Amino acid sequence: MAIIATNTSFDGLLADEKLVIVDFWATWCGPCRMLSPLLDEVEAEMGDKITVVKVNVDDADEIAMRYRIMSIPTLLFFKGGQVVDKTVGAMPKSTLVDKINANL
Image 1 (cartoon, rainbow, N blue to C red):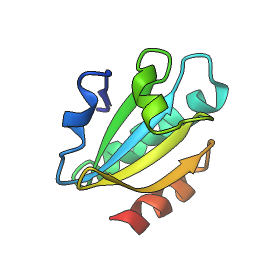
Image 2: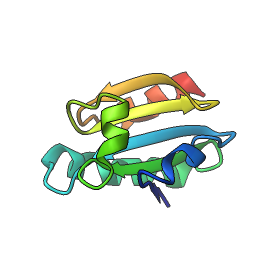
Image 3: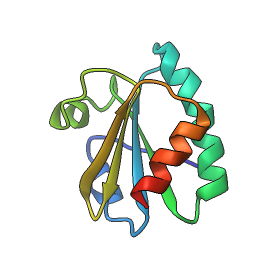
């Protein structure tokens, strides 16, 4: 299950050995509501390789500002605490899985 990040807990969540996928979203965002269940499915299937962290941009605006999140949903892919890839917008599950596999 995805981890909900706050302004204070976020940095500690990036130290995972796995690929960390950070989902920047908001409750009012339609494309976010489309992407979220797909991300949950992929996490259930690939949870041994990935960690999903969700950041509500309304609740954790400091994190969104730090990473210059201008549009949501935005996914940032972290390895070793560093951003290695980024996607913006909703996408089909197959595209999401391909993006994850490219960053493993």
